[in-house]
Length: 465
Image (cartoon, rainbow, N blue to C red):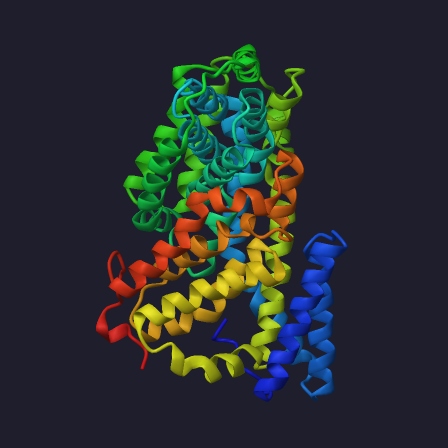
Protein backbone atom coordinates (compact mmCIF):
# COMPACT_ATOMS: atom_id res chain seq x y z
CA UNK A 1 0.00 0.00 0.00
CA UNK A 2 2.99 2.31 0.22
CA UNK A 3 2.52 2.81 -3.50
CA UNK A 4 -0.69 4.74 -2.64
CA UNK A 5 0.04 8.44 -2.78
CA UNK A 6 -0.85 10.45 0.31
CA UNK A 7 -3.14 13.37 -0.62
CA UNK A 8 -2.42 15.12 2.68
CA UNK A 9 -0.19 14.78 5.74
CA UNK A 10 -2.07 15.39 9.00
CA UNK A 11 -0.37 16.43 12.23
CA UNK A 12 0.95 13.56 14.33
CA UNK A 13 -1.50 14.17 17.18
CA UNK A 14 -4.38 14.32 14.71
CA UNK A 15 -3.34 11.01 13.12
CA UNK A 16 -3.01 9.34 16.53
CA UNK A 17 -6.46 10.60 17.59
CA UNK A 18 -8.03 9.11 14.46
CA UNK A 19 -6.35 5.76 15.07
CA UNK A 20 -7.53 5.79 18.70
CA UNK A 21 -11.10 6.52 17.60
CA UNK A 22 -10.99 3.66 15.07
CA UNK A 23 -9.61 1.29 17.72
CA UNK A 24 -12.38 2.36 20.12
CA UNK A 25 -15.03 1.70 17.46
CA UNK A 26 -13.55 -1.77 16.79
CA UNK A 27 -13.30 -2.67 20.47
CA UNK A 28 -16.81 -1.46 21.29
CA UNK A 29 -18.50 -3.22 18.36
CA UNK A 30 -16.61 -6.51 18.62
CA UNK A 31 -16.17 -6.92 22.39
CA UNK A 32 -19.28 -5.17 23.75
CA UNK A 33 -21.88 -5.41 20.98
CA UNK A 34 -20.74 -8.82 19.68
CA UNK A 35 -20.94 -7.45 16.13
CA UNK A 36 -19.15 -9.12 13.21
CA UNK A 37 -15.88 -7.29 12.49
CA UNK A 38 -17.17 -6.17 9.09
CA UNK A 39 -19.48 -3.59 10.68
CA UNK A 40 -16.94 -1.56 12.72
CA UNK A 41 -14.61 -1.54 9.71
CA UNK A 42 -17.41 -0.21 7.52
CA UNK A 43 -18.18 2.46 10.14
CA UNK A 44 -14.48 3.37 10.28
CA UNK A 45 -14.36 3.67 6.48
CA UNK A 46 -17.25 6.13 6.55
CA UNK A 47 -15.54 8.08 9.35
CA UNK A 48 -12.35 8.36 7.29
CA UNK A 49 -14.33 9.38 4.20
CA UNK A 50 -16.02 12.19 6.15
CA UNK A 51 -12.67 13.27 7.61
CA UNK A 52 -11.09 13.30 4.14
CA UNK A 53 -13.91 15.40 2.67
CA UNK A 54 -13.68 17.79 5.63
CA UNK A 55 -9.97 18.17 4.84
CA UNK A 56 -10.84 19.05 1.22
CA UNK A 57 -9.56 15.77 -0.24
CA UNK A 58 -11.41 15.06 -3.49
CA UNK A 59 -13.98 12.26 -3.33
CA UNK A 60 -12.42 10.64 -6.40
CA UNK A 61 -9.09 10.41 -4.57
CA UNK A 62 -10.77 8.79 -1.57
CA UNK A 63 -12.57 6.32 -3.81
CA UNK A 64 -9.30 5.56 -5.60
CA UNK A 65 -7.66 4.88 -2.23
CA UNK A 66 -10.43 2.42 -1.35
CA UNK A 67 -10.03 0.59 -4.66
CA UNK A 68 -6.23 0.48 -4.57
CA UNK A 69 -6.30 -0.77 -0.99
CA UNK A 70 -8.74 -3.56 -1.82
CA UNK A 71 -6.75 -4.55 -4.93
CA UNK A 72 -3.78 -5.45 -2.71
CA UNK A 73 -5.76 -8.47 -1.50
CA UNK A 74 -6.78 -9.93 -4.86
CA UNK A 75 -4.02 -12.55 -4.74
CA UNK A 76 -5.25 -13.75 -1.35
CA UNK A 77 -8.87 -13.74 -2.49
CA UNK A 78 -8.19 -16.03 -5.47
CA UNK A 79 -6.31 -18.42 -3.19
CA UNK A 80 -9.24 -18.37 -0.72
CA UNK A 81 -11.53 -19.61 -3.51
CA UNK A 82 -9.27 -22.59 -4.12
CA UNK A 83 -8.87 -23.22 -0.39
CA UNK A 84 -12.65 -23.57 -0.11
CA UNK A 85 -12.63 -26.05 -2.99
CA UNK A 86 -9.71 -27.99 -1.49
CA UNK A 87 -11.36 -28.38 1.92
CA UNK A 88 -14.61 -29.68 0.49
CA UNK A 89 -12.79 -32.05 -1.91
CA UNK A 90 -10.58 -33.41 0.89
CA UNK A 91 -13.70 -34.03 2.99
CA UNK A 92 -15.42 -35.83 0.11
CA UNK A 93 -12.38 -38.01 -0.54
CA UNK A 94 -11.86 -38.90 3.12
CA UNK A 95 -8.43 -37.24 3.39
CA UNK A 96 -9.39 -35.05 6.34
CA UNK A 97 -11.49 -37.73 8.16
CA UNK A 98 -8.63 -40.26 7.86
CA UNK A 99 -6.12 -37.73 9.15
CA UNK A 100 -8.32 -37.00 12.17
CA UNK A 101 -8.94 -40.69 12.83
CA UNK A 102 -5.21 -41.41 12.96
CA UNK A 103 -4.77 -38.49 15.33
CA UNK A 104 -7.15 -40.09 17.81
CA UNK A 105 -5.16 -43.32 17.61
CA UNK A 106 -2.33 -41.52 19.41
CA UNK A 107 -4.34 -41.05 22.63
CA UNK A 108 -2.73 -42.96 25.49
CA UNK A 109 -3.12 -42.92 29.30
CA UNK A 110 0.32 -41.33 29.62
CA UNK A 111 1.56 -37.82 28.78
CA UNK A 112 -2.03 -36.61 28.49
CA UNK A 113 -1.33 -32.89 27.95
CA UNK A 114 1.39 -33.63 25.40
CA UNK A 115 -0.88 -35.99 23.46
CA UNK A 116 -3.74 -33.48 23.56
CA UNK A 117 -1.36 -30.89 22.11
CA UNK A 118 -0.10 -33.27 19.42
CA UNK A 119 -3.55 -34.48 18.32
CA UNK A 120 -5.01 -30.97 18.14
CA UNK A 121 -1.96 -29.96 16.09
CA UNK A 122 -2.70 -32.77 13.63
CA UNK A 123 -6.43 -32.00 13.43
CA UNK A 124 -5.71 -28.27 13.13
CA UNK A 125 -3.35 -28.83 10.21
CA UNK A 126 -5.85 -31.21 8.59
CA UNK A 127 -8.82 -28.82 8.65
CA UNK A 128 -7.02 -25.46 8.83
CA UNK A 129 -9.40 -23.99 11.42
CA UNK A 130 -8.41 -23.36 15.02
CA UNK A 131 -11.95 -22.61 16.19
CA UNK A 132 -13.45 -25.73 14.58
CA UNK A 133 -10.69 -27.86 16.12
CA UNK A 134 -11.34 -26.31 19.54
CA UNK A 135 -15.11 -26.66 19.31
CA UNK A 136 -15.01 -30.35 18.36
CA UNK A 137 -12.03 -32.43 19.47
CA UNK A 138 -11.16 -29.76 22.04
CA UNK A 139 -14.50 -30.21 23.77
CA UNK A 140 -13.92 -33.98 23.78
CA UNK A 141 -10.56 -33.54 25.53
CA UNK A 142 -12.07 -31.18 28.09
CA UNK A 143 -14.64 -33.87 28.86
CA UNK A 144 -11.90 -36.45 29.36
CA UNK A 145 -9.90 -34.11 31.62
CA UNK A 146 -13.00 -33.45 33.69
CA UNK A 147 -13.67 -37.19 34.05
CA UNK A 148 -10.07 -37.74 35.25
CA UNK A 149 -10.29 -34.74 37.61
CA UNK A 150 -7.16 -33.10 36.19
CA UNK A 151 -6.53 -29.46 35.38
CA UNK A 152 -8.99 -28.04 32.86
CA UNK A 153 -6.86 -24.90 32.53
CA UNK A 154 -3.76 -26.82 31.39
CA UNK A 155 -5.86 -29.04 29.12
CA UNK A 156 -7.46 -25.96 27.55
CA UNK A 157 -4.00 -24.41 27.12
CA UNK A 158 -2.78 -27.52 25.28
CA UNK A 159 -5.91 -27.53 23.09
CA UNK A 160 -5.52 -23.86 22.17
CA UNK A 161 -1.79 -24.31 21.48
CA UNK A 162 -2.39 -27.26 19.16
CA UNK A 163 -5.36 -25.69 17.40
CA UNK A 164 -3.44 -22.51 16.63
CA UNK A 165 -0.36 -24.45 15.55
CA UNK A 166 -2.66 -25.91 12.90
CA UNK A 167 -4.16 -22.52 12.09
CA UNK A 168 -0.65 -21.19 11.56
CA UNK A 169 0.91 -24.06 9.59
CA UNK A 170 -1.94 -25.50 7.54
CA UNK A 171 -2.09 -24.64 3.81
CA UNK A 172 -5.88 -24.69 4.32
CA UNK A 173 -5.81 -21.87 6.89
CA UNK A 174 -7.16 -18.48 5.87
CA UNK A 175 -4.72 -16.62 8.13
CA UNK A 176 -1.76 -18.49 6.61
CA UNK A 177 -2.91 -17.67 3.10
CA UNK A 178 -3.65 -14.08 4.05
CA UNK A 179 -0.21 -13.53 5.62
CA UNK A 180 1.61 -14.85 2.56
CA UNK A 181 -0.58 -13.17 -0.06
CA UNK A 182 -0.65 -9.71 1.51
CA UNK A 183 3.15 -9.37 1.26
CA UNK A 184 3.45 -11.25 -2.05
CA UNK A 185 5.14 -14.42 -0.78
CA UNK A 186 4.38 -17.91 -2.12
CA UNK A 187 2.17 -19.85 0.31
CA UNK A 188 4.50 -22.82 0.69
CA UNK A 189 7.61 -20.65 0.90
CA UNK A 190 5.86 -18.89 3.78
CA UNK A 191 4.99 -22.15 5.55
CA UNK A 192 8.54 -23.44 5.13
CA UNK A 193 9.99 -20.20 6.48
CA UNK A 194 7.70 -20.32 9.51
CA UNK A 195 9.24 -23.66 10.50
CA UNK A 196 12.31 -21.80 11.81
CA UNK A 197 10.30 -20.38 14.70
CA UNK A 198 7.38 -22.81 14.78
CA UNK A 199 9.35 -26.05 15.14
CA UNK A 200 11.35 -24.86 18.20
CA UNK A 201 8.12 -23.54 19.75
CA UNK A 202 6.42 -26.88 19.03
CA UNK A 203 9.26 -28.96 20.52
CA UNK A 204 9.54 -26.82 23.65
CA UNK A 205 5.76 -26.89 24.13
CA UNK A 206 5.57 -30.66 23.67
CA UNK A 207 8.36 -31.27 26.20
CA UNK A 208 6.81 -28.93 28.76
CA UNK A 209 3.36 -30.49 28.33
CA UNK A 210 4.89 -33.95 28.76
CA UNK A 211 6.59 -32.84 32.00
CA UNK A 212 3.38 -31.24 33.26
CA UNK A 213 1.21 -34.27 32.43
CA UNK A 214 -0.34 -36.06 35.41
CA UNK A 215 0.18 -39.76 36.15
CA UNK A 216 -3.56 -40.41 36.34
CA UNK A 217 -4.97 -43.29 34.31
CA UNK A 218 -7.22 -42.43 31.40
CA UNK A 219 -10.45 -43.98 32.67
CA UNK A 220 -13.00 -42.51 30.30
CA UNK A 221 -12.23 -42.77 26.60
CA UNK A 222 -15.84 -43.20 25.53
CA UNK A 223 -16.12 -39.82 23.80
CA UNK A 224 -12.94 -40.39 21.80
CA UNK A 225 -14.12 -43.91 20.95
CA UNK A 226 -17.43 -42.48 19.68
CA UNK A 227 -15.49 -40.02 17.53
CA UNK A 228 -13.45 -42.83 15.99
CA UNK A 229 -16.44 -45.09 15.42
CA UNK A 230 -18.36 -42.25 13.85
CA UNK A 231 -15.48 -41.59 11.49
CA UNK A 232 -15.24 -45.29 10.58
CA UNK A 233 -18.97 -45.40 9.90
CA UNK A 234 -18.54 -42.77 7.18
CA UNK A 235 -16.78 -45.41 5.06
CA UNK A 236 -14.11 -42.86 4.14
CA UNK A 237 -11.21 -44.06 6.33
CA UNK A 238 -8.77 -45.64 3.85
CA UNK A 239 -5.02 -45.50 3.19
CA UNK A 240 -5.51 -44.22 -0.35
CA UNK A 241 -7.20 -41.05 0.90
CA UNK A 242 -3.69 -39.70 1.63
CA UNK A 243 -2.95 -39.52 -2.11
CA UNK A 244 -4.28 -35.92 -2.43
CA UNK A 245 -2.02 -34.95 0.49
CA UNK A 246 0.90 -36.63 -1.27
CA UNK A 247 0.17 -34.63 -4.43
CA UNK A 248 0.07 -31.43 -2.39
CA UNK A 249 3.44 -32.20 -0.77
CA UNK A 250 5.04 -33.28 -4.05
CA UNK A 251 3.98 -30.15 -5.94
CA UNK A 252 5.05 -28.03 -3.00
CA UNK A 253 8.52 -29.56 -3.12
CA UNK A 254 8.57 -28.91 -6.87
CA UNK A 255 7.79 -25.26 -6.06
CA UNK A 256 4.65 -25.21 -8.19
CA UNK A 257 2.46 -22.06 -7.83
CA UNK A 258 0.07 -22.24 -4.88
CA UNK A 259 -3.12 -22.00 -6.95
CA UNK A 260 -1.99 -24.77 -9.33
CA UNK A 261 -0.95 -26.95 -6.38
CA UNK A 262 -4.31 -26.51 -4.64
CA UNK A 263 -6.23 -27.12 -7.87
CA UNK A 264 -4.28 -30.31 -8.70
CA UNK A 265 -4.72 -31.73 -5.19
CA UNK A 266 -8.45 -30.94 -5.31
CA UNK A 267 -8.81 -32.68 -8.70
CA UNK A 268 -7.06 -35.82 -7.40
CA UNK A 269 -9.27 -35.76 -4.28
CA UNK A 270 -12.41 -35.67 -6.41
CA UNK A 271 -11.21 -38.72 -8.35
CA UNK A 272 -10.36 -40.53 -5.08
CA UNK A 273 -13.90 -39.88 -3.83
CA UNK A 274 -15.27 -42.34 -6.41
CA UNK A 275 -13.26 -45.17 -4.83
CA UNK A 276 -15.83 -45.32 -2.02
CA UNK A 277 -18.74 -43.04 -3.00
CA UNK A 278 -20.52 -42.07 -6.20
CA UNK A 279 -21.65 -38.49 -6.74
CA UNK A 280 -23.31 -36.96 -9.77
CA UNK A 281 -21.45 -34.16 -11.53
CA UNK A 282 -24.03 -31.66 -10.23
CA UNK A 283 -23.58 -32.92 -6.66
CA UNK A 284 -19.81 -32.47 -6.89
CA UNK A 285 -20.20 -28.90 -8.16
CA UNK A 286 -22.65 -28.12 -5.37
CA UNK A 287 -20.31 -29.54 -2.70
CA UNK A 288 -17.33 -27.63 -4.06
CA UNK A 289 -19.32 -24.40 -3.87
CA UNK A 290 -21.48 -24.85 -0.76
CA UNK A 291 -19.23 -27.25 1.17
CA UNK A 292 -19.45 -30.86 2.28
CA UNK A 293 -22.33 -31.86 4.58
CA UNK A 294 -21.71 -34.74 6.98
CA UNK A 295 -24.76 -36.83 7.89
CA UNK A 296 -23.46 -39.41 10.38
CA UNK A 297 -26.07 -38.48 12.99
CA UNK A 298 -23.32 -37.79 15.55
CA UNK A 299 -23.42 -34.07 16.27
CA UNK A 300 -19.70 -33.65 17.01
CA UNK A 301 -18.64 -35.54 13.90
CA UNK A 302 -21.09 -33.68 11.69
CA UNK A 303 -19.93 -30.35 13.15
CA UNK A 304 -16.31 -31.26 12.42
CA UNK A 305 -16.85 -32.49 8.87
CA UNK A 306 -19.57 -30.13 7.61
CA UNK A 307 -17.54 -27.32 6.12
CA UNK A 308 -15.55 -26.12 3.13
CA UNK A 309 -16.68 -24.80 -0.24
CA UNK A 310 -16.19 -21.46 -1.96
CA UNK A 311 -19.20 -20.07 -0.11
CA UNK A 312 -17.51 -20.64 3.27
CA UNK A 313 -14.74 -18.23 2.25
CA UNK A 314 -17.07 -15.29 1.67
CA UNK A 315 -16.95 -14.10 5.30
CA UNK A 316 -13.17 -13.93 5.17
CA UNK A 317 -13.09 -12.45 1.67
CA UNK A 318 -15.53 -9.72 2.67
CA UNK A 319 -13.48 -8.91 5.76
CA UNK A 320 -10.23 -8.78 3.78
CA UNK A 321 -11.73 -6.43 1.18
CA UNK A 322 -13.13 -4.08 3.82
CA UNK A 323 -9.97 -4.09 5.95
CA UNK A 324 -7.70 -3.44 2.99
CA UNK A 325 -10.02 -0.70 1.74
CA UNK A 326 -9.75 0.96 5.13
CA UNK A 327 -5.98 0.58 4.90
CA UNK A 328 -6.06 2.25 1.49
CA UNK A 329 -7.88 5.23 3.00
CA UNK A 330 -5.42 5.43 5.90
CA UNK A 331 -2.57 5.69 3.39
CA UNK A 332 -4.44 8.09 1.07
CA UNK A 333 -5.07 10.42 4.00
CA UNK A 334 -1.42 10.14 5.08
CA UNK A 335 -2.32 8.84 8.54
CA UNK A 336 -0.06 5.77 8.49
CA UNK A 337 2.81 7.68 6.88
CA UNK A 338 2.61 10.42 9.52
CA UNK A 339 2.82 7.93 12.39
CA UNK A 340 5.60 5.88 10.80
CA UNK A 341 7.68 8.99 10.03
CA UNK A 342 7.46 9.94 13.70
CA UNK A 343 8.64 6.56 14.98
CA UNK A 344 10.90 5.68 12.05
CA UNK A 345 14.04 6.66 13.95
CA UNK A 346 13.30 3.87 16.43
CA UNK A 347 13.31 1.21 13.70
CA UNK A 348 16.84 1.45 12.29
CA UNK A 349 18.14 -2.08 12.94
CA UNK A 350 16.87 -5.51 11.94
CA UNK A 351 16.08 -6.44 15.54
CA UNK A 352 14.16 -3.25 16.24
CA UNK A 353 12.09 -3.55 13.04
CA UNK A 354 11.08 -7.14 13.81
CA UNK A 355 10.33 -6.24 17.42
CA UNK A 356 8.27 -3.26 16.27
CA UNK A 357 6.27 -5.39 13.84
CA UNK A 358 5.69 -8.09 16.49
CA UNK A 359 4.59 -5.57 19.12
CA UNK A 360 2.30 -3.90 16.59
CA UNK A 361 0.59 -7.22 15.84
CA UNK A 362 0.23 -7.96 19.55
CA UNK A 363 -1.07 -4.43 20.23
CA UNK A 364 -3.70 -4.62 17.48
CA UNK A 365 -4.86 -7.97 18.88
CA UNK A 366 -4.98 -6.48 22.37
CA UNK A 367 -6.70 -3.20 21.47
CA UNK A 368 -9.02 -4.36 18.71
CA UNK A 369 -9.25 -8.09 19.39
CA UNK A 370 -9.30 -9.00 15.68
CA UNK A 371 -6.91 -11.57 14.21
CA UNK A 372 -7.19 -10.60 10.56
CA UNK A 373 -6.62 -6.91 11.20
CA UNK A 374 -3.49 -7.64 13.23
CA UNK A 375 -2.06 -9.45 10.19
CA UNK A 376 -3.29 -6.99 7.58
CA UNK A 377 -2.31 -3.74 9.28
CA UNK A 378 1.06 -5.01 10.52
CA UNK A 379 1.97 -6.38 7.09
CA UNK A 380 0.97 -3.20 5.27
CA UNK A 381 2.58 -0.81 7.76
CA UNK A 382 5.99 -2.54 7.95
CA UNK A 383 6.69 -3.68 4.37
CA UNK A 384 8.70 -0.57 3.53
CA UNK A 385 10.63 -0.65 6.81
CA UNK A 386 11.59 -4.31 6.35
CA UNK A 387 12.96 -3.49 2.90
CA UNK A 388 14.95 -0.56 4.27
CA UNK A 389 16.84 -2.86 6.65
CA UNK A 390 17.35 -5.43 3.86
CA UNK A 391 14.84 -8.09 4.94
CA UNK A 392 12.77 -10.16 2.51
CA UNK A 393 8.98 -9.99 2.80
CA UNK A 394 8.75 -13.59 3.94
CA UNK A 395 10.28 -12.48 7.26
CA UNK A 396 7.41 -10.02 7.73
CA UNK A 397 4.82 -12.69 6.89
CA UNK A 398 6.38 -14.93 9.54
CA UNK A 399 6.37 -12.19 12.19
CA UNK A 400 2.72 -11.36 11.41
CA UNK A 401 1.76 -14.97 12.11
CA UNK A 402 4.07 -15.48 15.10
CA UNK A 403 2.72 -12.38 16.86
CA UNK A 404 -0.66 -11.99 15.18
CA UNK A 405 -2.38 -15.31 14.47
CA UNK A 406 -1.42 -17.14 17.68
CA UNK A 407 -1.81 -14.21 20.11
CA UNK A 408 -5.52 -13.58 19.45
CA UNK A 409 -6.80 -16.50 21.64
CA UNK A 410 -4.85 -15.08 24.60
CA UNK A 411 -6.90 -11.86 24.67
CA UNK A 412 -10.09 -12.29 26.79
CA UNK A 413 -12.12 -9.78 24.71
CA UNK A 414 -10.85 -10.96 21.31
CA UNK A 415 -12.98 -12.87 18.81
CA UNK A 416 -11.07 -16.12 19.43
CA UNK A 417 -10.77 -15.60 23.19
CA UNK A 418 -14.51 -15.11 23.64
CA UNK A 419 -15.36 -18.09 21.42
CA UNK A 420 -12.92 -20.48 23.11
CA UNK A 421 -14.07 -19.52 26.59
CA UNK A 422 -17.67 -20.23 25.57
CA UNK A 423 -17.07 -23.65 24.00
CA UNK A 424 -14.51 -24.99 26.50
CA UNK A 425 -15.98 -23.42 29.61
CA UNK A 426 -12.51 -22.29 30.74
CA UNK A 427 -11.86 -18.53 31.18
CA UNK A 428 -9.21 -17.09 28.88
CA UNK A 429 -7.21 -15.78 31.83
CA UNK A 430 -7.08 -19.33 33.27
CA UNK A 431 -5.71 -21.10 30.20
CA UNK A 432 -3.48 -18.19 29.10
CA UNK A 433 -0.38 -19.22 31.17
CA UNK A 434 -0.64 -22.75 29.76
CA UNK A 435 -1.08 -21.89 26.06
CA UNK A 436 2.65 -22.46 25.73
CA UNK A 437 2.94 -22.50 21.93
CA UNK A 438 1.03 -19.21 21.65
CA UNK A 439 3.28 -17.60 24.25
CA UNK A 440 6.54 -18.92 22.82
CA UNK A 441 5.93 -17.97 19.17
CA UNK A 442 6.16 -14.16 19.51
CA UNK A 443 9.08 -14.48 21.95
CA UNK A 444 11.07 -16.66 19.54
CA UNK A 445 10.38 -14.41 16.55
CA UNK A 446 11.78 -11.41 18.48
CA UNK A 447 14.79 -13.40 19.76
CA UNK A 448 15.66 -14.58 16.24
CA UNK A 449 15.20 -11.00 15.04
CA UNK A 450 17.88 -9.70 17.39
CA UNK A 451 20.27 -12.61 16.79
CA UNK A 452 19.82 -12.47 13.02
CA UNK A 453 19.36 -16.23 12.89
CA UNK A 454 16.96 -17.81 10.33
CA UNK A 455 16.40 -14.46 8.57
CA UNK A 456 16.43 -14.02 4.80
CA UNK A 457 18.01 -10.88 3.35
CA UNK A 458 17.50 -8.97 0.12
CA UNK A 459 20.34 -8.57 -2.41
CA UNK A 460 22.17 -5.30 -1.71
CA UNK A 461 20.91 -3.67 -4.90
CA UNK A 462 17.26 -4.15 -3.76
CA UNK A 463 17.72 -2.57 -0.34
CA UNK A 464 15.94 0.78 -0.03
CA UNK A 465 17.87 3.77 1.25
